[in-house]
Image (cartoon, rainbow, N blue to C red; front, side, top):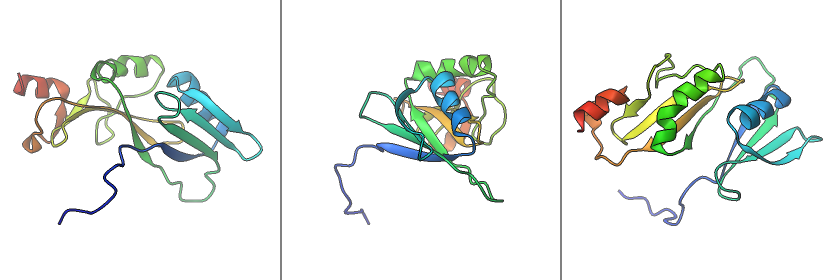
Length: 157
């Protein structure tokens, strides 16, 4: 059965993350990932960043990860394929370990065949799973599973 939802929804405008140290996380997203600061509410412990063009997407960081069960979250930044492919070197230069879908260190991006998308994962200072992702032009290949990008290229020449 097809959902009778809102057909005009075309993306997610904002995502919010709880962080243990707002100053440290602000520096990570601003200085390491290069996001533009949109607004700060120091009295409330909140910082907002623009993601992509201003007014197209936003990330909010909220001070306060207290408690014995620290929840970590996941989200993906959409970017050009060339940026995803070059992100491993950039991440390593910033002392960030690039990861695969299962959280293991990698030397190249992976492809998720059913989408298909090329991806690189990494962790922010609070352990949240962050992904750089580009949807590929090729047809989905659900039998491909999740494998290194070089194997996708070799199979889809």
